[in-house]
Length: 336
Ligand code: NDP
Image (cartoon, protein in one colour):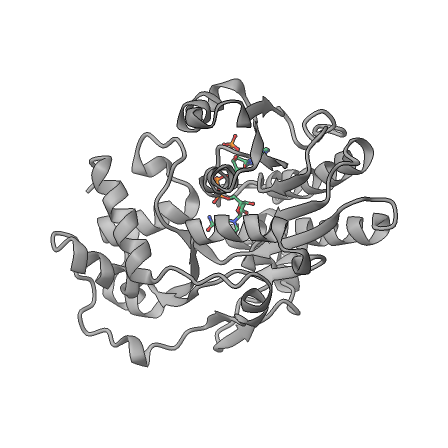
């Protein structure tokens, strides 16, 4: 079969492409400009004509994906802005929402061959920022960030703007599917990952240009930008990028995933967990807060694992595995 992967040059997407190719699929990746295609072509040259790249310049335009979807059996839609620099919330919301509804509309119109579409959403669409420890499940939606952006507009926090873009985009995907499910040959699966860490295959010249989550990992673990209090108090949940890529492949191939929203989380962390693991492998890196006792940590953002276990059954990489492989990667680039 052939899979279309949007935003194929992104941190997560390159691993998604690699995973599909390794499993024997053909892949067509979309990028925004030709200069983003070269790195991918050389990375996947051994796969010959099983890998191709097409340019979709502006995913917000009507019919943007009309050509790209032709003849594919499945679609993984990952392209969406993830940065915290937007002034107007619409800078994030418009590409997130229009990109999502746009690809679904193009599939409806031009791709009767498509059987399954997986959309990369986020735990940003699930969580509600909270000062009390909570376990979230697929039943939960982040309406709080939407309300904040509605009330404060461009004065909302950068995170609220990003989270709103993801929540609205995911909701738009389900709305589209509910409206059109009797007319289409495909079904929808949505993946909701928390913080994504792990090694990278995408094109990055220096650490400052890493994608949002990998840059925060680098800054915290290598540069030591968080103080001792922050290291043991701040955290979230995480998943290794390779496990998330595998989740995309399983979301396409597992029949029983059909119609589901699935949280893909390896577990909760405090930043000191990654700092401790990093210091163990590379003793030249900061030790952080050596008073930290992981057994006593209170995690505010945790996710129910059951649905992922039942529908995808991934055995997740540990904090140690993710940290070691990421650091080996930094080291190979001369960034340690
Ligand atoms: P990257 O920034 O590495 O990749 C984002 C991809 O989306 C790139 O291909 C980028 O293209 C494309 N993109 C961004 N903005 C636009 C736009 N306005 N129009 C068209 N394409 C655009 O991020 P990640 O790999 O981390 O993120 C991929 C997906 O995973 C996103 O949907 C993100 O929300 C989601 N996610 C990420 C998490 C993480 O921790 N990293 C956690 C949860 C979800 P270009 O290179 O041209 O800008």
